[in-house]
Amino acid sequence: MSKIRGKDTTPELIVRRLVHLAGFRFRLHRKELPGNPDLVLPRLKKVIFVHGCFWHGHKHKSMPKTNTAFWEAKIRTNMERDKQNIKELKKIGWSSLVVWECRTRKKRDRAKLARKLLTFLNG
Ligand SMILES: [Zn+2]
Picture 1 (tube, rainbow, N blue to C red):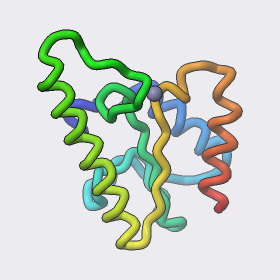
Picture 2: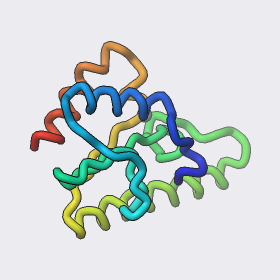
Picture 3: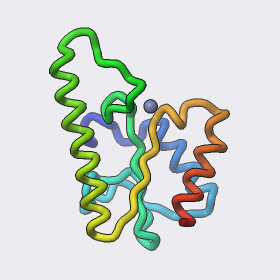
Picture 4: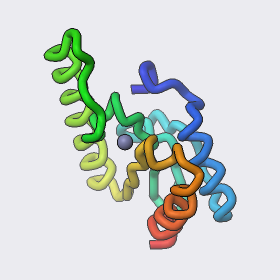
């Protein structure tokens, strides 16, 4: 997915900053883990995915008006792969958290996001 996701998107930087502020150390894009997670916390065996809403099929996103069937199929494939990756990670003892791009956009949502990250990382 890295090809279409881009490496240092703003939502990802926001999540990194929040996790860092919370005092956690992490690594980035571990290729040896299923799904190449965006943030990896090896000691905790936890990973965080920061998902773009369109590419990963967040339900508020509508399909383009042209080539709709193509996009639908593509995004459905992405969603299935995401689900599979989380399942694979679980199987080898890793917990995953998905952060949606839209939850990082507004400043007023950041506190909520920070709490969610803390709950996950401390859990
Ligand atoms: Zn979204």
